[in-house]
Image (cartoon, rainbow, N blue to C red; front, top):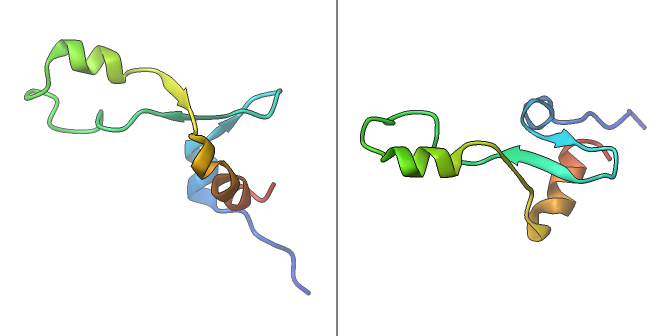
Length: 64
């Protein structure tokens, strides 16, 4: 049986902390920033934890 490969795209986007939490960037901050208010862009900056519903799927993508 061959080894399982982790998803390279997920590995670049998700950080695993020492306690095992999964951190990701918030969505909506890639393009069309002129239209968005500065209040919204400040709120979207930074990282957030992956939702509970997605944790199992993301862990599987990361090969954990």
